[in-house]
Length: 454
Ligand code: ADP
Image (cartoon, rainbow, N blue to C red; front, side, top):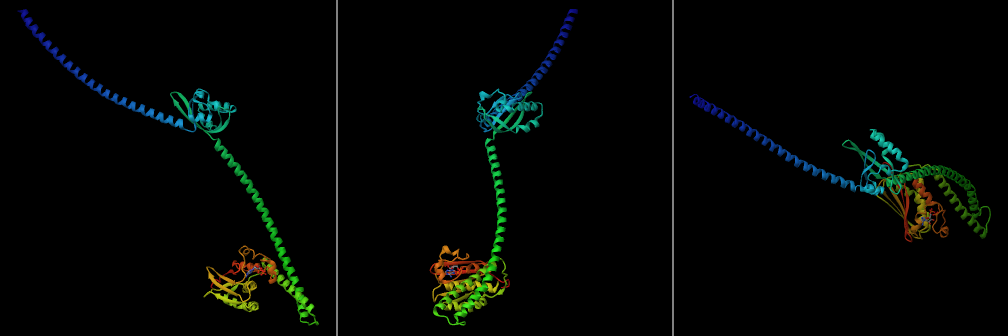
């Protein structure tokens, strides 16, 4: 009974325990499963992250490789030498530019000390500089690293320009420098310097020459002034006796002091001809020198050109009459008045008309024209005479210049008329020029300033 009881009791107790145990196990395994599932999830998440990271790394590695390739390409194609060294100064990389500049191949140079690339006398300094650089005294080092002499494999030295960058890999320090061969630049600089020095020298020489010229021109001016004064004085002194000679010759020709025979008359004609010519010459020289030395003061006033032309007619018409030449006057309508020295400009007109009469055959026609031109008045004296060849046109205003002198001599004249005319016109601020066709005639033009109120 007791056993039954026990057994019953026992089986009942056992059963319960088993049931409980089972339940506990189930719960525990359920938890385990859940925890496993959670771990699994975390693992797969971690896995995904890892995958992403791997992809990222691969991309990074690819990008790095590409950048490295680009870097290498730049390195190799650069014309400059790009050289890297370690902190002991040993060369660890060498590009094609370096090979071209220094002459060493990569195999020859890698591992060698960088000092092989500079002349011996600078190597100790260089090493000292490197030591200072390693000790962190960079700036000082850089100052002498900017330009220095490089040395090629064949031992020849050449000027270089160097820039330097420091970089680190782990604990080690490295330096990469870009070395440029500046031989050409230096030569150009040198040439420029020499050219500048030469130019400076030439400038100085020119300055000295200019100074000398200035002094010479002052001396010449003085001499010219003295010459003008001498000529003016001499001409003045010559005029008195010449007038006496002419006066007495005329008296004798008029037989006032007594009868003269034909031969004596001929002699008197010659004396008179030459004396009058001489007097004209003396007067012309006097005029010229007076103007040249600035002794002539223009008496400017407002003059009407028709009045001026009218006033000279009385003087010029007898000259024209001798060769039966006629004079036409064609003055523009409403011609403004000019601001001139009437007597002097009248002299110019008489001079030009006299020349025209002289170089125009009998019965020829002379013409005076005048017209307004911008801010001046242009006056022209025109003839249909022998004309002036083009090659002579610029010379005829020079003193004593006469075209075909021997023939001209027959016509008289001193060769000073046009020079005086030019001076008078230029004194007025105008200009004078000739237009001519040889054999057909000439046209002498000059300009005069307008009077302000016309
Ligand atoms: P000249 O006293 O000889 O006339 P000018 O100085 O007045 O001196 O003239 C210089 C030269 O210019 C003359 O000798 C002449 O050869 C030339 N000439 C001047 N005017 C005329 C003109 N109207 N026709 C041709 N030739 C001229």
